[in-house]
Length: 399
Image 1: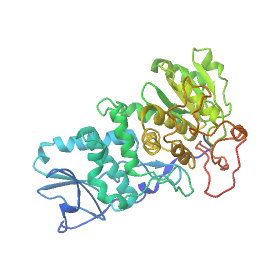
Image 2 (image 1 turned 135 degrees about the horizontal axis):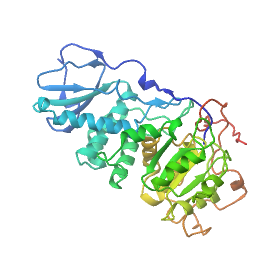
Image 3 (image 1 turned 120 degrees about the vertical axis):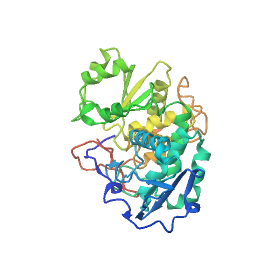
């Protein structure tokens, strides 16, 4: 869903990294996370280490920055992840560093530490051939020093998506072939994530992308999307928000177009959820899904498809979604996704309304509104982001 805001630098990008320090008299490798024995380490420090003959230090705190909506500060997106992979590849291959230990460090600020820790663990999955358990193991003893990520809202986020959740989602996506560091196109990602260039991101390559609604300024119009989507193989558009454009612009160009509209900031009714799964599970469907900003409602439904079809937990799905498209899944949409865990196997394609008993609540009068806690409306601003709710606040539905 979406309600208007300009992205702003998150707290993680304010200020500088660790202060310059003197000799590293207290450097203790036993306190570092070890990714390659005698070669690759991670640590956090409030003093910037000084280069030594036997150790090369580097940090990305001031180079790779997250740009947030409200209180969100990470994780760093796939483009920044790829930039980090290239940077560390270069260091591990550099003849001048061959005899040195390489120590990647962050500031002790838990938010910077979380972004950095996730980067090196994702590197371990992609380049060191580690599975999730092996990549997480070096960080396990530091888990209480890592800040939980925050949704793209200004309200408390009790859900607390963790570094571990994001790593689990990333490792599952790599396993499925959704991220290939050698093939990933940084320029294309960074071009099309911008509102003036379409504002879209692939979540499941060649199957499902998320984008913001045509007709919501400063987004593109339908004709621009048609021109770009057709060569990419997209053949279906799913609209989740109120009508801001004429669907005929897609239909007359050969696209299937589905309206599964429900309130901004809310969760789908049972009927809408089942219709979405029916459409997305069609093997011929390559879908572009949007709400207003393409974050809240869009991320929620794509995430549920990932849980049902691709074996993601709710937390792992949200982690992958935010790596692909920062800001995805807002407020109580997170808890809603988790509430469906383990209940999706028999729901969706070719099942109609044959919902197994105990699977999900039956259709009822509640379904004419929305399933789960709705959210009040934030004041309209200049750029779309999803509406969010403050815990305990009475519900006010968008019109």
